[in-house]
Length: 212
Image 1 (tube, rainbow, N blue to C red):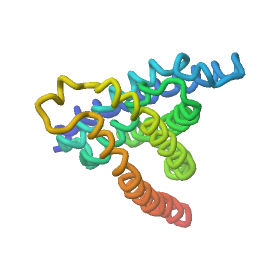
Image 2: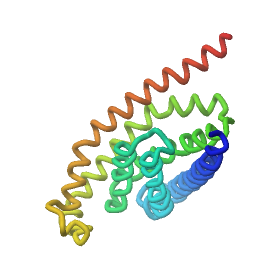
Image 3: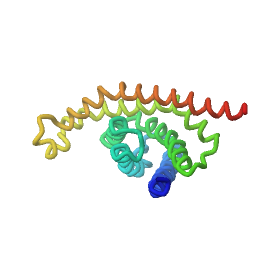
Image 4: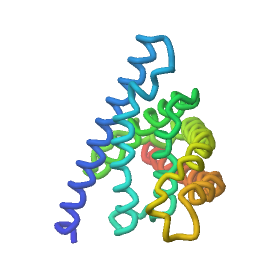
C-alpha cells in the first residue's frame, strides 16, 4: 500500500509546491503595484491574471475530494472555488485588494504546509502559522468574497452568463450563485469551526511533545 501511495504523494507535493510558488508571485505583484502606485486601483491589473490561473487550477482540489485522494469531500471545496472564481466579474471594487491580500497571505502558508506535510518535512513554525493565521485571515477573505459575489449579481443577471449551458435547465447560473451566496456563511462557519478544533488538536500535540 505504501508503494501505491507514493505516486499520489509525489503528485500532491508537486501540485501544492506549484500553488505555493504561484501565490508567492501573486503577493509580490500585488504589493509591488501598491508600493509603486500608492493606490489599490490597479489591483486586478497587477495580480488578477495569475490569481485567476491559480484559482482555476484549484478546481483540482474538488477533484481530489471527489476521487478520495484527500478526505476533504466535495461540497466545501466546490463552494469555496465557486466563490473565489467569480471575482473576475467585479474588477474595480475596493474590496478586491483586501480579498486578494487575504487570499495570498492564507495560501503562502497553506500550500507550503500541505507540500511539506506530504513528504513529512513540515517545520513546527509553519504548523503554528497554518493553525493560527487563519483566525484573522479567513473572516477577512470570506467577507471580501461575499462582497464581490454581491457586487457581481447585477452583471450576472444582465448578461445571463452561461445561458447556453443552462438553457436546458429550469434555473440559470444567476440562480445557482444566489443559492451559493445564501449557503456560503453556513458552510464557512462549519469550516471555521473545524479549523478551530484542528488548531486545538495540532498545536496541543506540539505542546505535549515539548513537555516530554
